[in-house]
Image 1 (cartoon, rainbow, N blue to C red):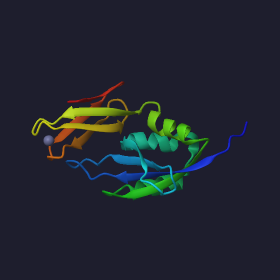
Image 2: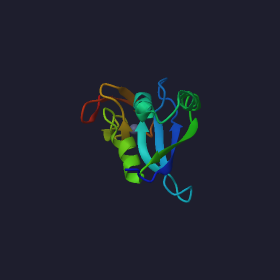
Image 3: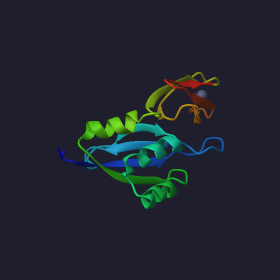
Image 4: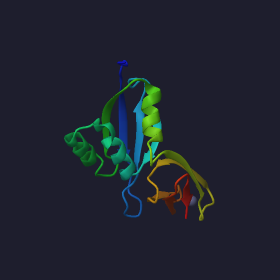
Length: 150
Ligand SMILES: [Zn+2]
């Protein structure tokens, strides 16, 4: 059966680095042809992003290299286009990708006691850093079901 395909614009932006480590990549999807702000998918580590881009061979090696280059600097942006049978399957793929699902991560800042929350896709065992609004950095290890602040 051939399903009608819709083309979705998926946007990536590299967040500023945190204590020398590359920032996460903010992934969002334009569901309205630019009429309203893009819908956030979540924050991805480089491993999580690479896994998704390599899956199904949707993107050529040249395209993957261009994406990596665009995201090589803080606040670098790039948009890729993917054809899906609908928004639901597109979001499910980007959100629920095996091994690095996007999950809520919550932690309380030790310095200012603010509660922080982020939706992050990372592979198990990966450590990433997030900064609180006050600037205090928290290192977070990804476990099988939930990311855990250490
Ligand atoms: Zn804080």
